[in-house]
Length: 334
Ligand code: ADP
Image (cartoon, rainbow, N blue to C red; front, top):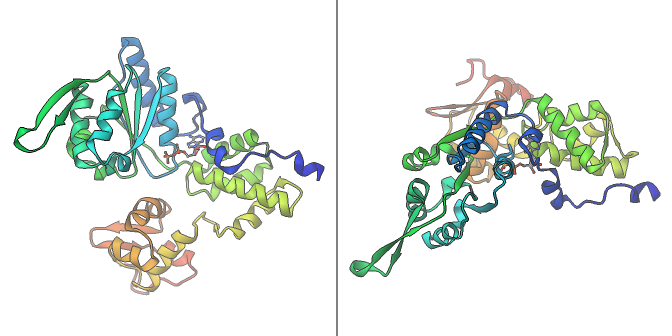
């Protein structure tokens, strides 16, 4: 009992905030984006102006929100946070923009999902720090130009391809976030373990890192599940054996694929003979939203060499068949 009460009592929800890196130097991995950002931020600082608008693009959980917060911290600026789906009415965005203070960072998550009228308002705001507020309706409507404080927009998107050209063109810099290497994720796991006071052996950290789908958010989540298991079923130390046993309970396989990843591969192979098949058909087969399959599952399956996107649809690779313990068709995969 004593040992238990000595363990950290942090709730899972507070943990994401605790674990967010605060400074560029604390941010593990993404060497290219980090260097590019450093230049953008440093030169803006030297010139005494707000930096260009920044777009961060990449799969969920790779650190886009964390980087947006770091950008604000590095600029000593306040950050206002919203998201594309929250900006359904242009008026919501107008209110947000007109409350900005000079130098603020405005973070719009999932910016590819912003509604059209808000997007058009954003063009002028990004370019001229101005909004046109439309008053009234029909032929009598007038637009009143309103100045807003110079600010820096940081947009995040899991699908930069879904951004319209005019919006994309207004960002001065796009940071393309990549999946993390196992070595980088090992650092993420160790850092999180030390912040949360979790005892983990080196080999345990390696094992979690290897199974985290290249994604820090997943590494941190698996670490918490391993902590639970170690606490309840072992002596509190995350050894490699404990990690393996814990991840088996949570359906994370050798390669880090989770239940949905495997469902997608299984459907592709079993129901569609390995493809090619359209992504929406595949999504229906596994009972998921197309966007989830496309933005959450597929990028990692592609990167892991399990799935190929072809003009005719999705195709399972030989590795996918083998990973599922099946023999690829004799004539080769489609
Ligand atoms: P995104 O906005 O891309 O979905 P987040 O910035 O919310 O991702 O990151 C998810 C979690 O992963 C954060 O709470 C943070 O703990 C962790 N994380 C992300 N990137 C890093 C990193 N480079 N180093 C350490 N932890 C990270």
